[in-house]
Amino acid sequence: EPEVTQTPSHQVTQMGQEVILRCVPISNHLYFYWYRQILGQKVEFLVSFYNNEISEKSEIFDDQFSVERPDGSNFTLKIRSTKLEDSAMYFCASSSPRDSYNEKLFFGSGTQLSVL
Amino acid sequence: EDKVVQSPLSLVVHEGDTVTLNCSYEVTNFRSLLWYKQEKKAPTFLFMLTSSGIEKKSGRLSSILDKKELFSILNITATQTGDSAIYLCAVSPQGGSEKLVFGKGTKLTVNP
Image: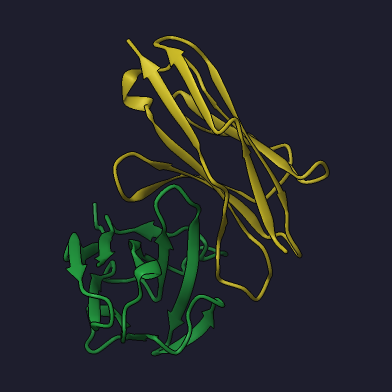
């Protein structure tokens, strides 16, 4: 079964450093997302991406965050200057609009980001 | 503010028991409700519900939505240790929005 893959599985960084989290969505999907889950808290929406542009973003997704689809397969999340509170599990997801709705998201295994 | 509340937050049962997990929601312009199972990391899709009263079933798992009372239940019959996981409920709040709003989840532990 096709799956969303994310790399790395763990990332440790120093506060103020830039990190790039990478994702390869399912190949025929058109909608891409980033969610995060701080330990013990809810899964939270960050951003959705469609047709090579951001289609929606949350209040969390401020100027320190950016997303990119640099080629036909990868989808990246960049955090420019990490803060301690950015420590979380970051999930990439993708979906297909083949059905009437595109909410049926397929999630990757996540990148655990630890900011020290 | 859109809100999804799941109960109970945790549940411990023995193999063979039947469990019912609850999800209530308050969202604008509801479109769909989804259930996910999160074992170690990635949430995996279980069900998507859009219409009231129509039960979705997959093996020992089933789910139903009540759009009038704004809740959904997820039933698991004859539980097995492999059902141990966090079960997440999420709703799609607006016709033009693509985000999912998640609840905190119910942590289910099935003991042998």
